[in-house]
Length: 76
Image 1 (cartoon, helix red, strand yellow):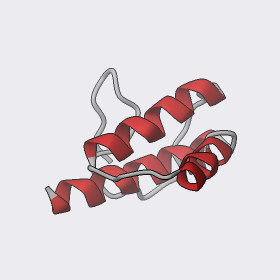
Image 2 (tube, one colour):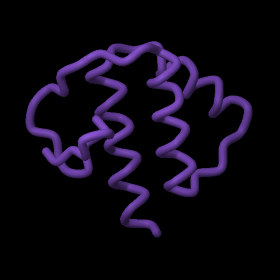
Image 3 (tube, helix red, strand yellow):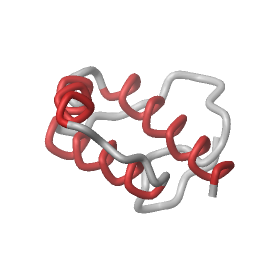
């Protein structure tokens, strides 16, 4: 699993549970940042769901953000 020093979101496949903690506001920011970079257009309900997911545990949010990052990389 590759990481940048200032970015805990993996750029590659994840083989074990991400470790760490991030407050909900940071998790929300990370999810939106990855969606923007991937070029995903969001509607009101999409944003509602992203806000809800941001409140989940860090390992789940980090994995979802990593999936978005990797999927966005293949579509750009």
